[in-house]
Amino acid sequence: MKIAVIGAGGVGGAFGAALAKAGADVAFVARGAHLAAMRQNGLKIEGGRGETHIHPCHATDDPATIGPVDFVIFCVKLWDVETAGEAIRPLIGPNTAVIPLQNGIDSYERLIPILGAEHVMCGVAQISATIAAPGVVQQTGTFMRLVFGEVAGGLSARGDAFLSACKAAGFDATHSENILTDLWMKFILLATNSGMTAATRLPFGKLRADADIVATFAAAFAEVYAVGKANCIALPDDTVANMVKATQAFPDTMMASMAHDLLRGGRIELPWLSGKVVAMGRALGVPTPVHNVLHAILKPHTMGNAA
Image 1 (cartoon, rainbow, N blue to C red):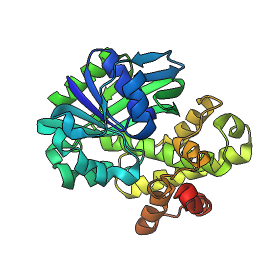
Image 2: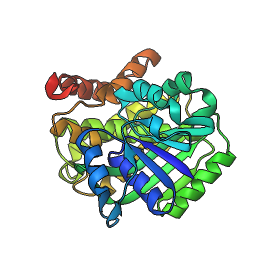
Image 3: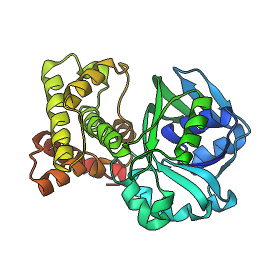
């Protein structure tokens, strides 16, 4: 199976390395110092699941040098979706499937006009990992899961094939019949966790012992849940309770990727997370007071130190 990973950061690097170690033909598209290190020293994944070192590593900044592939794991930041979508056209053959793994809820919608609906699936990545140094990805904890499926619902032969590759790579994976529900379940969790850990600049271990903060988490989860329901997404009745429970089990040092980006002085994905919750809430007539505050206090940092 030939796979291209677009964006070899925490998500793309970790999943791509696992697939490569299991024997898939994986090419990584990266840039800057990270690309240079991967070319020279390979890609190293460190953390709770042990160490994986892919060396030599097929890494490039030009998708055209890779050619058509079976699957594209699309892991760029949310502000780069359209630009990267245009750039990966050389990877698209008659049967290529692109699986976007962005944090928000609309990447697949943004890629369809560029690549065609027949080439776009939908995916959810569940992992805490970030670039620790050029060529090195650090994973927090051991949890590592991909959920993917067809936008229209149901199962497919290409989804089954990718599921087999994921199982061979040793991480948890699900070929979902209702991927939009899965996408929203992650969005409820991540939009809130990103806003809360970024606004406080603290990991979960420093937050969850405070009853007031736990109540704020619950209120923020409930807001996104209400927006999803108003948008006709099928969501379990116990979603909010399960989200609160999930935050209690996260590693003490874990922070959402947006919080890491903020602390590094980089651009943050706020407009597509709390900002998206606020915008959809206004359009649907759903109050989102907690996310209104998270969005407002983080908005000055949206462009990072360049702002």
